[in-house]
Image (tube, rainbow, N blue to C red; front, side):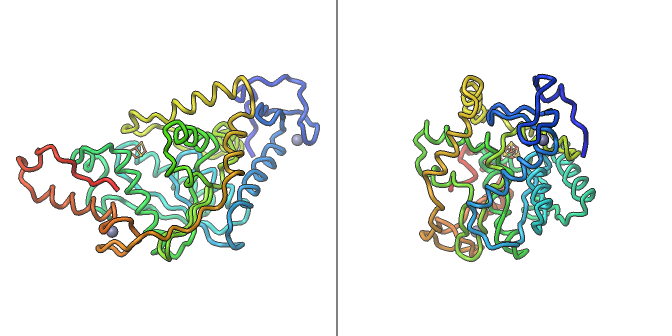
Length: 328
Ligand code: SF4
Ligand SMILES: [Zn+2]
Ligand SMILES: [Zn+2]
């Protein structure tokens, strides 16, 4: 375990004692009104993940496919699940975004090799014949929306083909609380049910999704990575512009600074008042790939069709101003 640089973790009085073992504390968690030494912090972190699993109706020892981006959240999720004894495999989709994707992939490989964990790198170019920057040039849709659709569909397919029934993502408390606030403010009722940290499988092809880090804050994940020596990639995607989720997070951080624990209360009380979502029944199968879909042709197949038609069209036809990718 790496020793912490106390200063990097914010202000903590030098004589503070660990809330749990009474040794010298190095980590201050205002939202818990607690101070921890390094060992007790790791105990707290593990416990937060164990508590998260209590909400997931999964059989014991089920193998988990971990979607890893190379950032702190997904690598921390993979690390803690491995520590807790879960059988895991990491999967990384290389989107082909120049240095950003190269650095993300390198962080995944380095982490997996250092822990001897099984993993797979999937190249978008090999699957769709095109990288994300190339898709961006051909569509008028928001690229993050297209990227999200691609990653979601590919993860479902890759999990099914490799025999996994559960996919893990690294969403943390800050992500989930700010998304909840955004959905409430905008009355996006259709998304509120999907806020539950476990989503059941759809049919026998779309795996269940779990978010084991939903109880821990981004800052706590940074501390965990620092203690465990996890070298994650912290660069920002060059296409990440115009997202509003950080504004909702800033609003929550303001409340948190005045009233520590508000973020946790907001999210946890919402989850407590909801229940495991019912398995989706109103779906058909995509007439091209046979995966569950709400429409005749799923978003991924629709995207592929449009890419092909764009390639086959003349430059004049291509610039007719119509959207290339249908909304799903
Ligand atoms: S910022 Fe947008 S384009 Fe970049 S990886 Fe995230 S979702 Fe994809
Ligand atoms: Zn302690
Ligand atoms: Zn399809």
